Image (cartoon, rainbow, N blue to C red; front, top):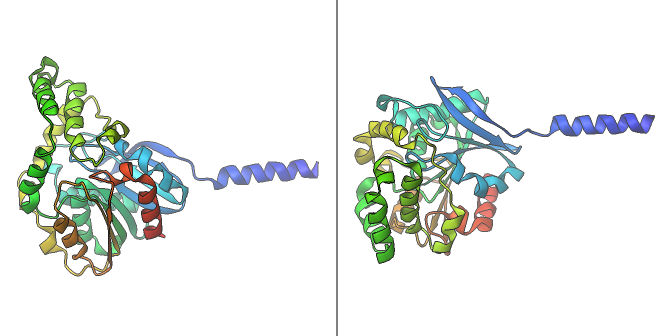
Length: 299
């Protein structure tokens, strides 16, 4: 009887003590954001790329980090399963305020943040606006901190487009499905663009943007960024920042290496790692190395 009671107590402790994975809409900063929480340990807020994507393309590749950390994924405003917002609410400051509201909601003193691609821009805004609430930041294949490298990046991407892919792009864009805003057609076109961002195009099968059915309607609100998408310069705005920073870039990324070197230069405590077999999705193409670097950094 005594052994049975001990067994029951042990099971109860194990069940109660283990963090449960949860997902759903949360009231955040006067809107509803879709959050997915997994794992246990030191929290890391995951900021997806875009603008207009959602957290799901990151989920399967970042899941190994949940063995040591509590991962807080979320869909940005008008993205994924989050509530649609008007153009006026779509700007870097509001996106940074959303991150701050998530921090407050979960009673986190200082945030660990991991961002990918375009997500680096609202995160850079967060670092500026809420410097006392940042613990450490990992920039994974970040877009440059200014649009001065946009033309060079576009040329690099265009040089990788095969004739077959170019014809396929034209075919998709002329199709009745695409003109009608069919999400499957839009996703097919997006995948052709993502193909140019990889070291090994065979890895394209490992990426799934999982665009929601309302993607085309939701995308209209992204025009709210307007001038911000051309006027930002976080290289000039972030100088000698003491936040520990990790920057991971891939040798096959389309942005020039100087762009990431300059991001590292914005921080007094930064580590820049170049992944030799990766493009813009280091967590896909070199996942084990990615998990190792990130775990070590946040440790």
